[in-house]
Length: 349
Image (tube, rainbow, N blue to C red; front, side, top):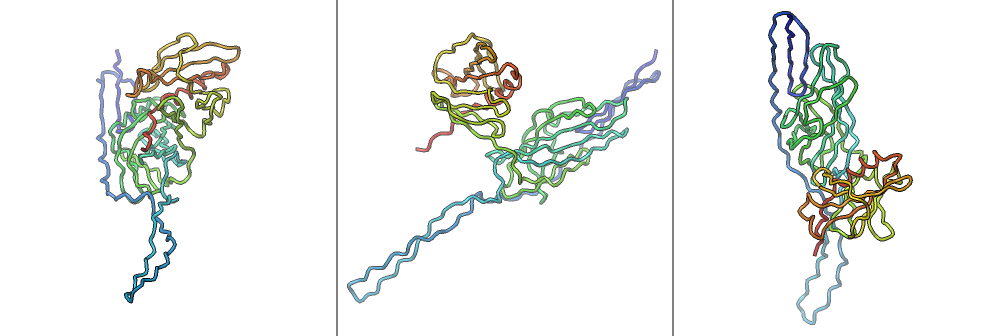
């Protein structure tokens, strides 16, 4: 009886599994240690606004009824903050750029920076992809989790390394790679220095560098739609949805690719449709009701838990118009919006 021999070649990013058979050999596993991350060179952040001065009118001095001369009043200045066009603003930036990872057995994996999102609190969300472009038939390639992997480096071209805060999607998972099929994940870094626009992305485990990452061209932004009847907002992508207002005054979002796919804020009331299910969308729990019409269906969403402000008399209520022919895309995109329900900012007194 033959015994199959398995050799595992592990880099912190990619694990290569080579299988073959030979008689009488026990299973073996070998691993290479991960490289250490580069030291960070701290750089102080700069101000987000540059003040400009504008003088007020100079007052005319009043003559004094004495021989003592009076001082001439000095002009006063008002500081007016103006937004610096050279600072990096919140939004999703078109970065583009790839580098190829070369491994044993002529295995090649393309590492690409798809885009970089800058949040309102100056965190950088780097979306990357891994695509297997060449490997022998007898070898399988598995991407290992990068949770806490400080060898995945996002740095300014000055050399300053941004702290890694977290990973999501494919970056946090152990995933087998298949030829030509990209795997997507995100790395969260920051905060950034808003006056720096040029970056590099380095996979120190595999010695690969994606350079010339420029935060200059915004693809789209994330906007927040305030609701009329509830102290909440819905966050949406400006390239995918168009905000509006319904006849009864509630906020609406129309999906640009499917104009009949519409989210409508509904005034507080009881659902009209039959109960369908209770669904957790990311961290927010919705009760779903609905009914069918000829070519479309209506789903009613009540947000019941998942945020401290939900509950009691505060139950945000939405209608979703769903064209049956394009049901899946409409539901998927609307679910992403419903997952971004958030308390509205407090009003200034």
